[in-house]
Length: 311
Length: 311
Image 1 (cartoon, each protein chain N blue to C red):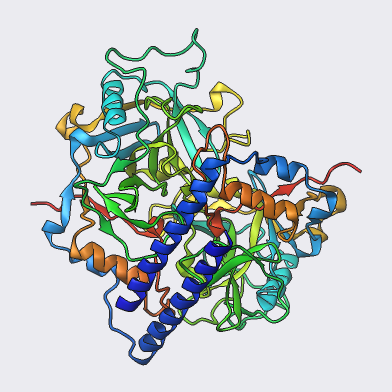
Image 2: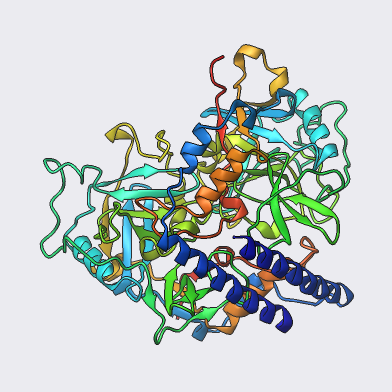
């Protein structure tokens, strides 16, 4: 620990020095920069990708639709099981039964642990899956950020997901940023099957990274989850069943009639527009922000989503 | 930038190496550690400090009380002005008029920019204040974390507030963590007087650090602010006045009769219990978490609050 601390201090000092030089140069020649919004608005069509309906969940709440992009590249077994459960209507009529401030909302079958009351899983649902906490980095396209991260050797984006990478172990994993969807589990690492899911609604709980299976992230509708009244329990579970937030249904977008789908596009994380917009946020200089931060945290990087423009 | 990146990579690699050694040692001899909760529950009375009513705001909402500890050490002029405004009932009957998902709620006088409709400031309110973005580190007691931070050379705690420090400039400032209360401003740095305030309700927007005056942080009742329905505007402003969340009143706790106060204690950030609890979270090893993170982010450090035990 001592050695690590000294190295950390040294690194911090070095970075501060270099960063100070950078700032000094900026101060000499204030750059005329486009804002992140201007860059994104001007992005060519090729910078955007369509959200794939076969890889998208619609969570219908009484308040509206939450849209999730799944991450089969990271959690193939969980995602396949989730698709089976969605097709079988597993979550329809179930609830969000936990809302812990600055942490997560959790949903699924609140009575899942009670054999007498638990909702049966749809036919084909696997009752046991391997832990899918990390994936191999072999063949993985990693859009790396240059920014230092305290939790992982490298951070960036894979398949549009905020991700971390350890070149030493050859592993990648999705980072627990705001909006990330993960599979709740009990103590055994392989105790999740994707039936009980959580979404991060607060400061990124990165201590959960590579300790749980992450299955995707919310790309639209986070405000419907983040405003759900918190449970009184220290862990946010509700006292009474009537306090739970009902789920109308969770369906695969590809199983929803075309006319009822929400077409969305996401800015590719390997596009120049994404790189430039992130840099514009990392070193924001405008009439309001006068001191460029010189840094951006993985979980502060905006992942732009839009309605496809009319053809 | 190139140099900075190379240094970052080198540092990251070094840290990964040291961290790997650490983990290997942990794996050999799994330590029998107390959990953060056990450590906090066992903390001696001396590890706790009373929240000072003269330095505490009660924000009364129809849903309950939000409690704020002010930071006069960082923003003496703003805090003094806020006390004047609270005593004069400035916010009573005003509203939370902005709720932007994963960012901030903002409150004050929604009609403040409209001279015809703006609520007059109470007698004694200063109409101009200096920017108080940073303070000198002279004589400041800084409970430093050993953890690397991408935004600042050093991070830790000052006066119970999450804070950053730059030894080169001799400046300290409060970091924009979840629950931090800041003074909204227009483009001129010295355009805030503390009338329009915001609270961070999402991933720490640390790019705001030392660019705005931070005046305190919420120590209880965050869930009342974080669940306020988001405004439809991209910046979270409501379309219609009736959508705003009303504020019953904001008062200094010392102006509230003793019987109506909420006594609270906060764990001192220089106490051994705080240090040990933070370490227990940094390297959590229990039946659920099997891989210690070896790191904690400033804004992930819990700042324990309790009702004082009966004497």
